[in-house]
Image 1 (cartoon, rainbow, N blue to C red):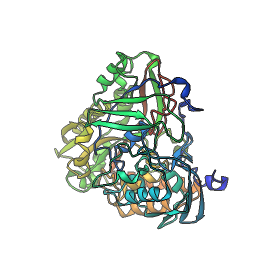
Image 2 (cartoon, rainbow, N blue to C red):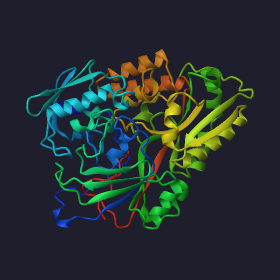
Image 3 (cartoon, rainbow, N blue to C red):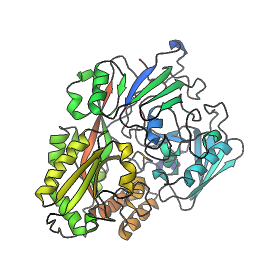
Image 4 (cartoon, rainbow, N blue to C red):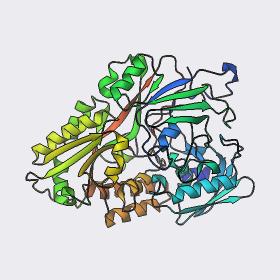
Length: 494
């Protein structure tokens, strides 16, 4: 195990208001025979052919398909996964020691294979969010070691290695495209993917962490939230993620599991082209928004009014928050037409967008609303084809580190920069936070960077969410965590 003094440098993620549900994986599951297959309804169909380098990465991690060198525990601390231990050799170099494990195609998890997988991630376009602003090289070291060297000191590298986008796949997975089917290391192996409608997974019996209790998983991708709730209520599925708040009352109380998360829903304004290239109009849009109306009305109390990029689940943030400075004076919209886009995989978002439309029109904008399914919207949003975008983002999902989301979402080189923000002051503040190792000082620097971002009015935090997961009455061991990285594990069964 890693030594305490190294762990102290990694305690950068918050002490959260919710913990993981027990996965019941204390031992082998041979006593349950072949087990029963789980039926799971997911809200987001694959948007990138299940590539681990984008939004689909969390689909793979939630289904127990992929793993990284590390994982995050309930307190946001890096914990062993494919790496049994690690140590920091100097400011820029870490040595990870691998455990004995195999890929689902039967090949061994070797230092060479791991180094190759990480190298592929560094070469991906766009760069995975977990590597935004980070340059690293990975090399095999002996029979069990992988040495990772970063261009600049990276005190949170072990936490970064837990990102779903840095999942380790076998050499056979990498060709013209990345294919995770049968090439990952988790307790469940993908065997069939039916486009954006369904997927089939079978238990991987040689999983290093013990044999899973379920024999497999049958997945349905159901973008419509009402349909997901109905499928659970009528016993068509055992687990249904992202139950809409409007459907919560239709489920028996025992079927609703509420988890405080680090997810924030925000209004992101396109700073590169169109109306919101004007800072004054961005300020006018921010002033028009009433976040309390969204938290109590749209989310029916399952959310808190937006205060920043980090919400109440990031317990240290509120006491360190810095007021934005240097904001532009609000301009006069004077009938300026804008296109506001969002997606319907999370049913609250179109409703929130409709409320925002009314608020913005009251302020003098003319608003055209566009709603699509997420996989048909993401590329257009990243290319700046909308003036404004309403999206929900788990601020700690990529690495567990509070700074990483700032680099990926709000800097000039960020790979998930939906506001297309490129501000020298923001980049400087984020770079300072990235280079700070001390836990308290890193948190302070993260909050200063948050203030710099909010000061541009490119991002308007709307609400901080508590998510509802539907869990069937016969199901035990569902993994409900604040980072929304997990759902099914070795101990999940019915």
